[in-house]
Length: 618
Image (tube, rainbow, N blue to C red; front, side):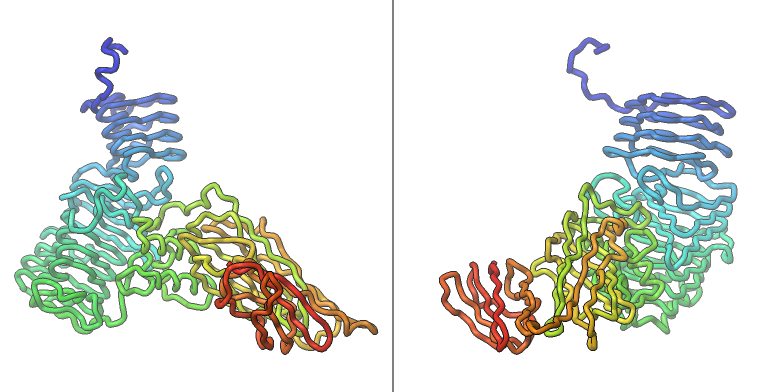
């Protein structure tokens, strides 16, 4: 308590000062420091100090760096409640950013200095903190040189800020790796960059967009495989004619604002959710060609000042024929159906793609990989379901894949005997998963002994799942996703049938070639099961009966029977021995919906033997 006032002055603000300032040509090493409550922790100008194990707390900027050749090492440091952990010119970047972490209200991204670019630069995805592809946070930025933006980069702009191009801009993404220009408020791409949860939703137009000025070189101004969201004027052309190809304009005020003698070439673009016009040809010096585009409806756009329902509006002086009628060229993450809206149906398409029953086009594959790990898995479907249910505001995209929390998922495949007279329902036991989970499983078995018939999910499990059975190769593919999943000892039942013409006792392992939970490979921990077939021989063979087993137990409305002989008489008795039902078995399941909760007994009889079992009705 240096000022000797007890707890009177507990709150300390940020002074607009710099703690440590590395000038041009200087050097140094900083380790195990705490820099707290100031404007900037460390300022670097054309220098490359080593900064390790430093705590940056309650700062406006943790490290701010400018100058060609600045390449500090910033490692294993903590940025807590620091608005911009790293601010840098595009003309320099740290040599290493390994092991750093964010906490509190620290923005989760790389702040770009408000500058005028006078030297050629290429902007690429970079890791920072927990992010493999950290978004760049832009203030106003002017390009007087050549700026190239590579696939996968996410550019987020502060409110009322924008990008002005006076020479050339090439932002050329790929179908599977789009470039994104959006608002700092937009949590959908790159996560909650401004670290405020849902306090500032991106539900309107907030940043000024990209302006191609009169001085631009038209042939070198290209946007391709780009997404532009939440801007006032997403793209303004001021006596300029850039090429816009495969650009998705989403929830802007105006998507393309063409002023003066502008004649942008627009092909294969998507226009979804603009509040005013998709294309506004202000002076109409040329007829703007905007062909093969999606306008929010298979009816194309309307010539009006504002949209008509989902149909986007254009001004006069726009040729929009031909136009797409079958969805977006470049959908947003998760929009696998390409209709412009995320729904549970999109999750079902992901599951089908994960097991191989559905082949996606390239642009759908990009939309399906919402975790950004390069694979299409059940966890991607889980992320979509979470978004649809309002449990998450964003798609991880280029962030690191989620972990299976602190849980320890286990997969145990049961064992059992199979008989010629009846199918075997083999339990697949799943335990220890988090409630919000995506599970990918590939089972293998001997197809010369067994054929898989179907997979029966546990009643009330809450999972959406897809299955593909390859009996020729002896493989079963299962992808399942849930936001409130219930697992257990009979999570799924695999119905197996004995192959014909088997005249000798046999057995086969049923094992997991793949067991993946939330994109973490746990195959090595999966426990295999065994299915046995025994040929009954000898004089007493006729007295040998199959073991009768009931699944699931306890049961809800449907009870599956393993080891029951078709054509036998089945009777159900209550706990007092009173017969309640009697029927001839024609399939391996019985309906229990008419029974109350309680304990019941099953007796199955035929000319040779009697089988008994008991079960609980939930």
